[in-house]
Length: 274
Image (cartoon, rainbow, N blue to C red):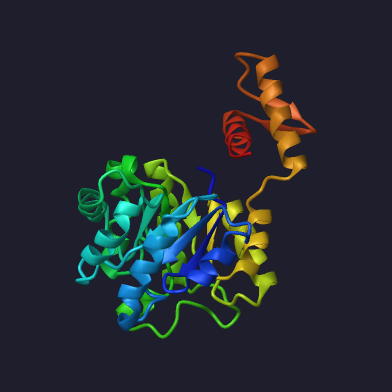
């Protein structure tokens, strides 16, 4: 399942769910957590379950409420029977939480949001043991500052402060250690598409394979950033072909630059994504 863009949609807004299907997103996240106020949870569960029953044109994931918040059992009772394509688990604190959710929703892949509590940071290396349950691994920079009493996770220019750059980096490495896709967090200012483009392109450069979105206008920018260009693909094919033509050679020269095994691995990964 290739996931460049995952678009959040409030679970109590079936009108927006329908519109989101034509956004170009690779998947929708029907949100029962932060986007829905407590008095609207039941209505959201009913709306999401009904929407999941429609003919499906792209993957539909459901963000349930946290495991220890007293709401997740009602979420699962409402939506599991409608067979979403996966569950987004907020405030995940490691592999044990994935196992707990997998036991309650057998067979449904899980995408943990893995940095929303202080304890979660220390569990980012544990997901390899539950990789068979995972869609990928993602992170968030909004809940963690509130949890530790920080005033913000961002500098005035929008970049992350050092603690949250650390959380991002550990998520990236935790995902790759588990051999699952690393999904970049949202860019909350949906009007600033230039900043979004910068973060999306940086994410792909750093090793993320997709990004979450909070508004349909963000989807084309994200898709473009995480889609290899024809020039990149052509170069990757040249690298693969060069090594295929010289079996047993450890290093080669292309366009005046030396390439070796890491370049071949990167080329094959890029072609696999494409």
